[in-house]
Image (cartoon, rainbow, N blue to C red; front, side, top):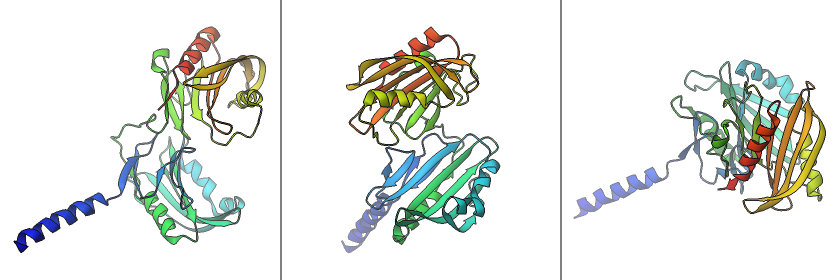
Length: 307
């Protein structure tokens, strides 16, 4: 009887230990996985994970440039210029990829943070994982470092660009494919390349607000956001109308503009307001077939749904 009891206890203990194993999750937009410590959840305002109670964060960025080029931003001189105090660096093994792990401290207002910045990649792409926690919380600092070191490169894993967003958009029916994941948003292009090579250079961005909206004039804020589109030089003309999509009120803007190379563009934007501080933005631009692209941008915007 006692022997059976011991066997049952061992089985239960084994099951309990397995249940305590860290959860390994795919990092959206990459072929990497990471062990997620207890208390960390997927962040809403950036690509990564955060511990809201402890004030810790793990931020993941994908840079479309060689790792050797990006390493230059982590010289001791450059880090000092950016307000960081260098502590150490190492080169952890990540399946043959070039890697560097930097440990630094940095003040944020009156709080000293300890950061572990892991960069790795090849000649085409660099992935940067920026982990930080209050320096006074040694346990939490250890956890974010462990999360950084738990990263595994999984070459057979398909990059889940859409797994890290809280919305859906029907881009496929309009001839667009997801090309890039960044900060909780997606960029769609015709060829699925972030730097599109399509003949009309068409791209369509969908994403949540990164910073809280401060302007009380929503219409004015929407126009300013359109003017800040990457590569846009000047907005020539535009029309703005009220819209409601997926239960959210906002504005739709259509217009013409010039980019930095003085090439004329058709531009499109829909801004949907969640509340007085948060919003979703959808923005498209193209250098050719203005009417066709405008219709496709509008169709994609109308298909927007929150998960």
